[in-house]
Image (cartoon, rainbow, N blue to C red; front, side, top):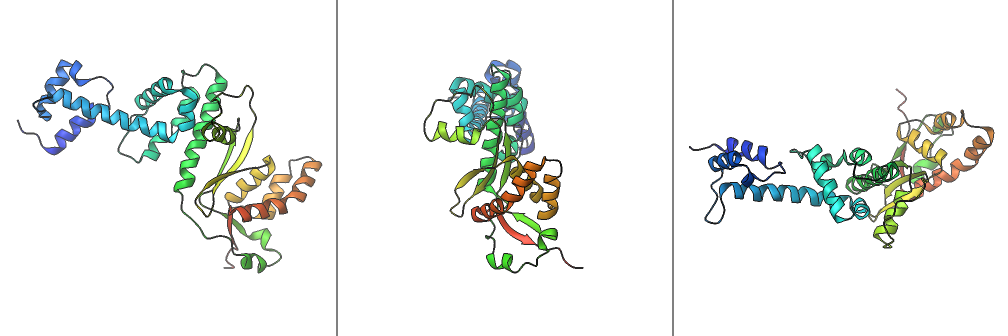
Length: 280
């Protein structure tokens, strides 16, 4: 019986994601013989198993490569188990690999292979950070802020103008400083140990003109302000929303710091434009 291409593809798509070997299932082996020819060395079922193993190896290596700090934390055997369980729970589909990675932080936060809740929280933070690194590297570019444009803005511009952030910028809040810990593990070679206590961190993750990814640690108020600006709020209204619920001493701190924050963000290339709304 001849099979059209669509039937062969449908059969392979149904069996390749399976963890169980086709050679160990007589019924599946019989079905495989209808769609796969095999060769002098391999039965059709054995040929299918090669495809199946390569499918899993490929996706496992994507996870290990893109979550290298998570893999360092778990070690090889446990990372293999994590990958198998993740791919079982989220079977790869016909979509970009980046789409496949989106559930990893939530999966890490609930995976029973971690011994403590603290380890799960840490792993989820690390997975979010490693996904953000991928997104920063792949994001579009934008020209730097033109100083002349800033100089020509009218006095009331900050009441109305929209601050434009570089499309690669990621704003991230963590329970643990995973941005520093990952660097210590993978660059300095320090032991992969989960900190005993949380230490909340707020960062802006960005890309330099040389296409190198960097992080900048932010005060909580600076982080909130940058988030408000990213949502489209003009600077002065954003400052009002930020300061209103805070005690007077924090309001004074923000007023004294905002100029420094904005200068830093423009110098680093985090802020790339200031857009005035049209007068129409």
